[in-house]
Image (cartoon, rainbow, N blue to C red; front, top):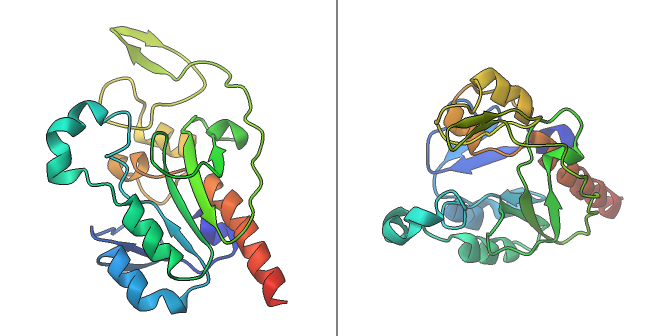
Amino acid sequence: MGLHRAGFDVTGVDLAPMPNYPFKFHRGDALEFLAEHAHEFDAFWAGPPCQSSCALTKGTNRVTKAMNHFDLIPATRAALQATGRPWVIENVQGAKVRRDITLCGEMFPGLAVIRHRYFEVNGFPVMQPPHIKHRGRVAGWRHGEYFDGPYRQVYGDGGGKGTVAEWQVAMGITWTDVRKEIAEAIPPAYSEYVGGQIIEQIQERAA
């Protein structure tokens, strides 16, 4: 959504069905799609599965990694590099990506999440906004005690994490009311910020 707001015509690719995806969608292997269709696009945005790096799953990765927590970042990077076009890899803290920029919800008015994310960018420079001091706690339960705060926990299904409507507002997401989809997303403000810089440079080069 953020890339659309920045001015791109967006096509999404995923192995899983995405009935709530608001743009053109192709179900299939993203790397295979890239190899076949890269020449049709001006830029690429990749979000490889984060479970192999996410702090929330590191405690179970030792058991499940061999089954389903694969690190697809190296293969994704290689495929993107081969396109010769601008690209971005977005992932969680702890992921093995270059921290060309780090974004936080506090950098964008109206969001109610912290949600730090790393972005490895290639083919264009991007400006890092200042990291504003957090205003307080993330609301939710901690060891049987509820704490209030200006931010929401947008992950998991445990108690105290807020309603779907609260998650939608916190993230700036309106096109889905499925918790899992919201939890796995990034706020559109993030990709709009980065995408706006990409499209501006593509247009300048074209001119």
